[in-house]
Length: 209
Image 1 (cartoon, helix red, strand yellow):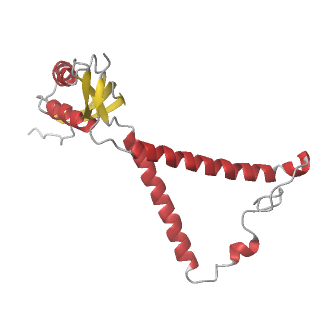
Image 2: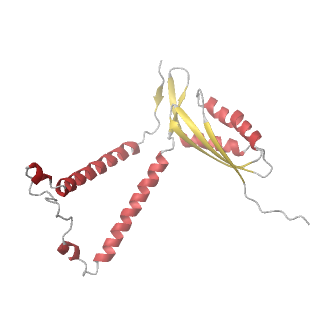
């Protein structure tokens, strides 16, 4: 019997993101089609008419006329408003870009109970447990864990900062046998592949007198 996950607080962020992407794509497609039809002079070449409200009728048309471009330049509020609007647009674009990068992280993991039902475990909770157990190992100064992939087949990306006395091979073996294996077993996963990156902690050189 297939597992039936019990959703905890279903988020609508994914739906909103897809709607916004769809609307932005349609707007850009319509604008590009308008420019392409006018720029290639397709109405004259293919002998068809355009609506009176069509923004570009021919290759010589521009988005803003000379008078439109100079209409508000002598007004004192024009430049501060234009700069503030552009700055706001750039900030919103950066915020959206960072939001997309954050959404690449796995939000939830499906935990199978073995009785035909399941539950949804927050991805950040599993990341926190993995990182805490990794940092508890001898020789690990800091640990950071990120889950990717699908909720039924997650993948872990582990970043370890090792102390000066740490043995990388031994640390990797313990991480695989302890932290990763405990997380895999607790979530009821068949496997939990991981990509591990290590670097040594920075420390000052010691003087020998």
